[in-house]
Length: 212
Image (tube, rainbow, N blue to C red):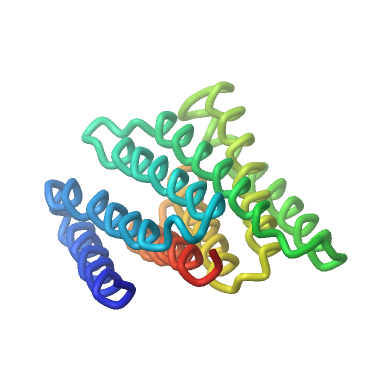
């Protein structure tokens, strides 16, 4: 099932990118959640063999779909989307903890580096976050940033290349989104956001099949 579902995911993802490029909102209602549902179907083919790791990843993907829906609605529900993706990251952290291969000096260095980068990034976007949603959104954004940082560190700790690459791409996707929204608009930012996001989620789903 890996190859046919991978082709379907690729085609659906390209459909969403086309909708972004052409500004066809109704197509996004089809292809954005549709791509994620196909990714969920891919992860599900690794169950029940993948055990707790697979079920936790699947739950994280489901919360991600909820976040996608909130963000694509005509009245963008950014805070609701943020909460949904926060829950997804917590589930991913739990999943990756199940597959943790150990904790070494490089893991600690990576976590410290990500934390330092996160603090600098948060300081840079803080004025924009406060302007848009006040202190409540500022707090939510800070908590979310901490969660995705821990998620990436946990993914690297699994020693599964697909998991680590997927988590890093997810982080990159969110970084582009946040910079574009709160710091400075970027040309065609949403194309970069969704390309990194779909590929990241796909690789995390694939890790259920190859690492479960």
